Length: 139
Length: 382
Ligand SMILES: [Zn+2]
View 1 (spheres, chains in turn brown, red):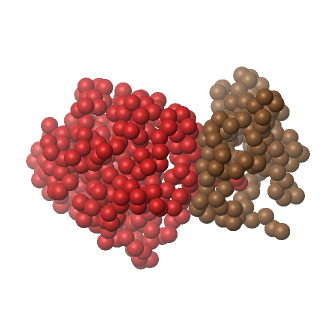
View 2: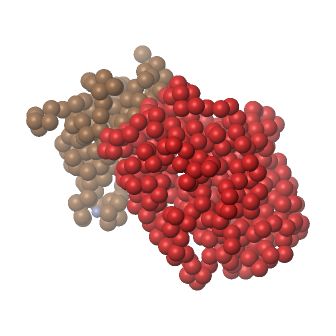
View 3: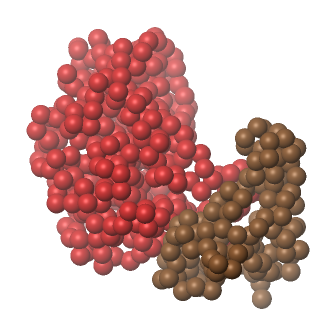
């Protein structure tokens, strides 16, 4: 079946990120000069403007900052899934990123729910990082 | 020159808006250039100026200065510039006009915004793109539209401070009442809180009527010096100042609901003039989404932090209430002209020309918009 949802077009900035996701690794760029960790994976550090970045393995742990339930067919391919959730996850490493929360009914999603990343192979070439609830004591 | 010294040295002397209601509905032959030319002609008439006197031109939207200048016969301007089409830019364009006049670049600056979003069937909210290159970290997850981002922030706000969707409905309901007193407003049907709650969710918890309209129309202003303004037709509306404070975050919404940005703009805009929240007679808000009203009220200090939803109840933000907001219906009910229609309404109110919507003895109006680039303005009459 053809995957009709949007997929990223890889650039020099984010190719390592998506290639790692495909290998089921969640990596984030870190500045070799000042230690700042950022996302999306721009080439340069937003704190000190260094272009000397390295990649670290992310813990995959975070919490839901906020969520919304999408009820309007804005995005091609997502219309059939409405209503579906989008969450903004605050990672332990600091950055925030949009994703979907899986494994909990939409009406039970609340901010501050602890979550962990998992890998969703949406096509042969692309893996998205999604999140599921994590047991707060099971860290 | 300090902000306090600059205040009141320039004025808005002419305004015009389209009949948004008459334009609602699509016309494939309608053009932004025609709408803009119409608005510019009417704004010059309003000011009592001839187009030959115009020597500055600022475009605030999707029309570029050159095709417009041909049509509007503005053949000899000394200063012109295009602003990007975005709501955040209205105060910026206004300040640019004022600075151009103050610094002798031009004597009479025309500025306008003109949109054909409805006729051109512009779709909003496709996601992605604003980060540059091909970076795409929202729509791959089905995230799209600023509205969904504000909605997501509202769940955080509710989590921290409580409050209900019904309480939020006081904002669209108030603006609808105002629109019903404005013959050019698009949304003329009455809307109760029950009607608001019965509407479908777009991005839950935000509903259809938390979202601004998509329509066609234009707004134009004429700005000149306070001195020249004295000889013109209308009571001059003084430009007190404008302020901006960027909040560039990839997720767009501010994690503290724009508290810092609003406090910063208040310091820049109101403090130098000795103007406090009690001195403001009305607020006009860039109501892209209802929650922008809520968070600005808290950020500028009208409502205590976390208590804005309670604060807006019982008609407080309606005409006749303590702080009437978006008295022409705002972008939720009058028209979406990216904040330009709100400034036109401010001018009408400050001149005393708002008819059945007139706020008695209206002297100072504050405007704000909350986005990746929050901006604000203060207009007043002596
Ligand atoms: Zn760095």
